[in-house]
Image (cartoon, rainbow, N blue to C red; front, top):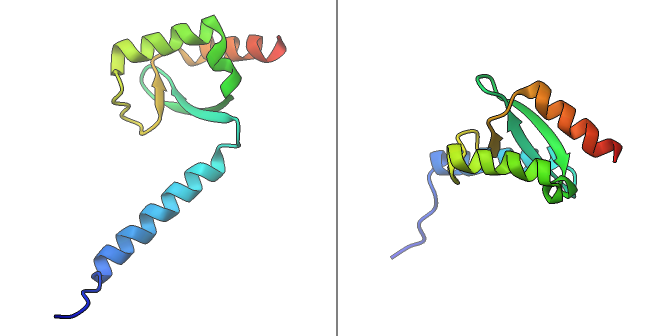
Length: 96
């Protein structure tokens, strides 16, 4: 009976996973969330969580729920929306 150490492959996978998780967290400031926008090519935006309370943003979330459910292929919140429309909406929310 002895102590079983993880293999080198398992250690490399763990380090890679930790690196990805810490990088993604560092990219999103506290009080914000990352969303992926676009019909075909997805582009990443970081928005304040206060936008979640706005009715217009909530309608986008309902569209995302209808299309993807809770399985988001990009690993984050994916919203099936025209990028220009999203930028217009977030500009209006930022101005108010």
